[in-house]
Image (cartoon, rainbow over all chains, first blue to last red; front, side, top):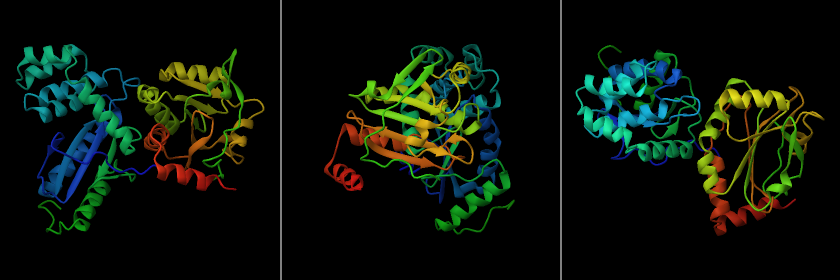
Length: 189
Length: 170
């Protein structure tokens, strides 16, 4: 059956933003060249801003490389940045420049976020993170990710809408409440 | 939604056009698992996503020795254009004339729309359906069900064999 259950669960290898004991974990399987993921990017940012400590956000790679020829390389670039402790800076950079994802652009972004650019370029060229990206993709397929972006809320595939920021954030708040995170809502609730 | 063929059933054989001048007979693929992915139409957004997803997974399917076949009522020329546009690297079959005949055989034809259901079948090396699933037409069923079915064919556990036998009873 199509279960839609996150496999494997969020673990130490994941890129996480937010508190580990947040009542809601939002996982995105995303593609840096996918326009819908680009649309989701500011919505996720808004959710992080509004839910603060209630939300932990995890990003896993799901490049649809035949549809998006730069997606796999971009995903590897984010992993190369992660190796230097700057995953989220690169993640943001990529989503904010979805229309410029050539290798030269990736190197430019590496420089902009002050990575060791020589190492970054070398590792990217060597395909050092190809397996990591592929493993993420496989876990997505196994979990029932069916396109990009696919979200999982506390381990279950989110089949509801996400494009309406308010509704999505409300749904995440509900998830926080039902997970026992009954903390008063945040400042700009 | 239709009642599609259930696990335990021998997959009905058929011959369909794979390109405007080539046909494929299902029986030729005996000896390895086959994934039959019926879908409503080329070009419609959900099918596009579903086929794009499977397109990325060919390597994984190949690890199981499995063959993936997409099937819709679109003509062979339409499939050719769709496959080229989306850079699909697997076979699309045209259930075009008589329209939907193979989809009907599998219980996967939507009379009201004149299209195939969004239905998945995984057959084993003997051509027996080991898993089938009919998704709501607007919902991309993903690939987890296919992978689980291929796993159970590759590593049959007692539990799986029993459940297949049970479901095979008339």
